[in-house]
Amino acid sequence: MAKSSKNTLDSAKKSLKSFEAKQVVSDHKVKVRMRDNRLAIIVTAAVVFLSTGSQFLYFNFGPGVSPTACINFTQTKFPSVDGKPNPAQIPDAAISQCRDWVGTLQINDSKMKIKLDGNKAPQATANFIKLATEDGFYNGVPCTRLTTSGIFVLQCGDNKGDGTGNPGYEFGPLENTPEAAKGATPTYKKGVIAMARSRDNDKSMGSQFFIVYADSKIPNDSKGGYTIFGEVTSGLSGLDSIIKAGTKNGSGDGAPKISTSIQSITLK
Image (tube, rainbow, N blue to C red; front, side, top):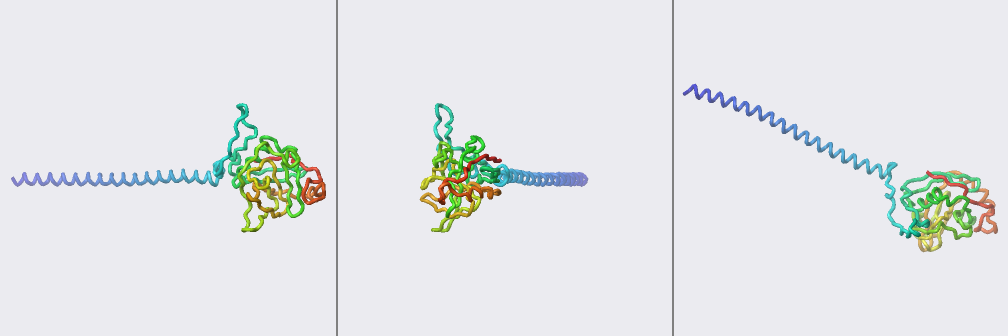
């Protein structure tokens, strides 16, 4: 009986050791599994973060800015004409790609370097791009207005040459107008390129624009200021001969005495 009890005790001890050994292995597996799960969660989160972060950077800071990221308005689409696209359709603001555009603007013999701001003025920029590069609208179009007193601008883009020219449509809203203290007159800096429009009508922009050749205080009207969509970055002095010659009628506001027109525009 005593020997049997000893055998039973030895067997129990062996079973306990076996169980404990298996339990250690099991505990280790659980710990490894938990560690692997935590690692998988961390890796997954990192992948999601990097993916989302890279998209944020790509669309907000990199070359892949969403073409509609800066556009917070819509344009009324004109109906088709005889089932065909209306040639007077307002250009899609997304053409601007919400980015800067650089290129050249040649007026007479003066070739100036320009930059357009498709982020702050997407509609005006898209309009200028389409008229300049797709339609060839501006080729040979005259600059019909020069102001030399108080306000210093050369106005171009009037395809009729009488102050009424346009591409067959008008658009708004105003974009990127200069700020000024309450009651003060906004200043348009030298080199600014802005859209011309009819007085008290913020949806009357078309093809006419003006180049500011010296700092100018231009009063707002009931609708506000004028859309700034670009700037001359170099070569502005090439307009000096036109400016110094003045106007045909000798006044401070009229047609340039020297015949002036747009020769070419390049953009990229």
